[in-house]
Image 1 (cartoon, rainbow, N blue to C red):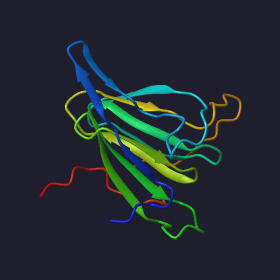
Image 2 (image 1 turned 60 degrees about the vertical axis):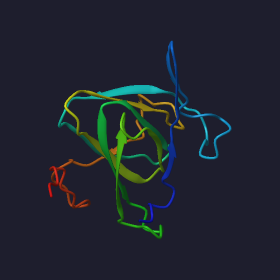
Image 3 (image 1 turned 135 degrees about the vertical axis):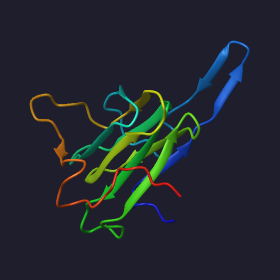
Image 4 (image 1 turned 180 degrees about the horizontal axis):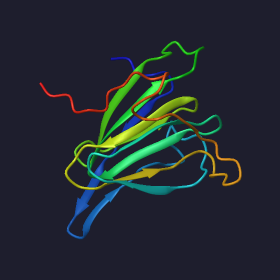
Length: 154
């Protein structure tokens, strides 16, 4: 399946030895690297949905390092060839990836494991407390994104 234009993924490699493990997440010489704004950690309890929002100024770079999440991206850019497309990516300890979410695309995730998920974000801009670059929708009821966060069995 073709990804939303501008969404980029990078499989992450874990390097183990007798002392533990090392995993690089994002390097300044990666093709996907644009700019460093800040780095932060967000946690999500099992079954919780953190969605929907987008940014006008920043791209987000997400990596789930513990637990698993379903990261969902909705292309809200009317000029994009993938306008209104929805991407679902299952990332975390069983599928270690870095995912770049381009500005103007709504995104959010659901923690799908049995324990708290730990998600790193390395956005391209620092958070502006006075004027946050966040535009939000209710995750379950809105007039923009028709998406059902419930588990899909079968």
